[in-house]
Image 1 (tube, rainbow, N blue to C red):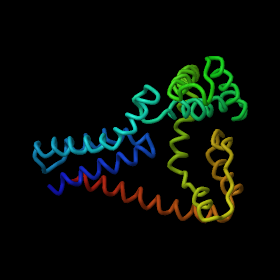
Image 2 (tube, rainbow, N blue to C red):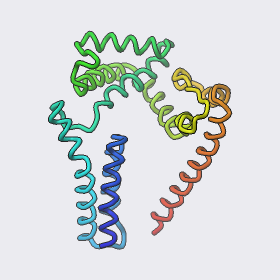
Image 3 (cartoon, one colour):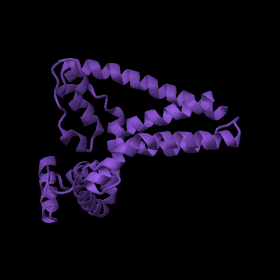
Length: 231
């Protein structure tokens, strides 16, 4: 019962996290797979735990999904996916391919979006997201290798991002936004140099603290995974 209760609360908490960051909607797949291969337990418990986890996860999401269905006629958590793909994924690819600035590339994509009849603030946000996704996919298909390189760099940036600016802002300390142009640069070392030359001393100190903490967490997670596999 205690183990089943843990799956219940895990589903509820992950549902709440997904409402904040919709990308977390992919995590239940991994959890369900691991649950069904939970060593040292009976199959009956595995199926019960998986069902409890999935149902509790969906219960948290259901009100928001219903709201989007009623208001926008779309059963989805967020309309941000297509926008992110176009204005971040495809944009960084276009910057690397064309050598244009981020603003120039985004203005070009904005023009294409408008040509397809989409008006920001007027068009259904899910329809707008779908149009943006189509444009982004068309561009990415034309430059798959460049997108793969930029996407890999984006994954690295995501794990290296320590969020020093929001923390500095919360503490009332001076902070500076690192221009997006740096993230499209082909040289990863340039991003590090830009960080230490552009950021304030407060942000650098915060980044070193959070970076050290994250490194400790990654090492602990890796150790936990090794121990779990051995068991």
